[in-house]
Image (cartoon, rainbow, N blue to C red; front, side, top):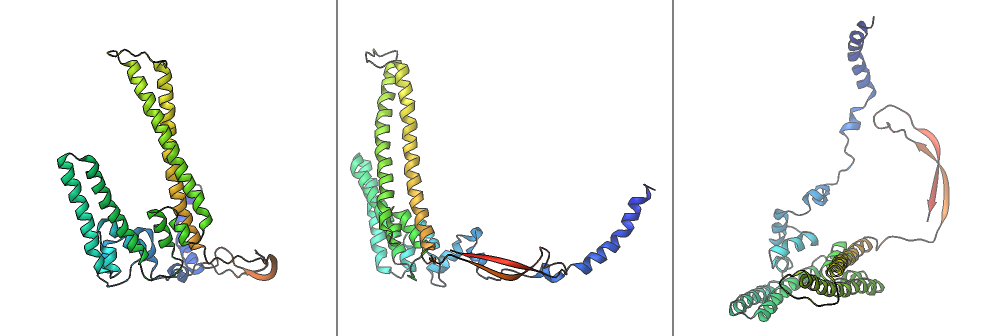
Length: 291
């Protein structure tokens, strides 16, 4: 009898399939619950597309401010082309080219300071071109979370100014400046105790300092760890203010009402398989809290 049980179940399988087909509605599985044609464009897998970027630069269609910014970081001047500010292109290309050329020239002559200043000037012009592209991006609807985020990334605190939350600027700038101060302090002490440790353990040198090698090694590791913590703190404040600018730009139009009430009303409760099974809904009570 036990050997015949699997065969009996196999014979019943077609009957079960026919019954299941009658119970399930095919429309439930073919129905599309998200008919947004722009969903693919906004998804993370197509967050940046070169075709989309260059199509916008050619003025074939509009692109998001994030796409324009990301492409302009590599293809310098494209944000000015997209914004139709063509007269700014000679300034951008001329400034960057002059800075790089000056850096190379002074570097060959051995003038390291002048070379560094020239490279820094070229970087400043590149940064200014990105900022100019974000500022002149159209449409200029307020608020734009993309603009707020890019402002914060380009200059800490500027996203808060864009969101008109000026009271947050001292908090973030205080955190960044304080972290930078402790970074310089810990770095100075780290370099000091590293030098002492090297001198104390150098067999060819006669070290006569008051700090032993083991003590110098201990403080060297301590200040190196504190220096790294300071860098992490600066990065944390920088990222936090960018996230803050993005979130509060999204929540700018969020309605905050003083009305706190409880609403009770009858409702229909649909079962979990309502879209697939022929199961009627049930009567119930809905509690709604408004705050």
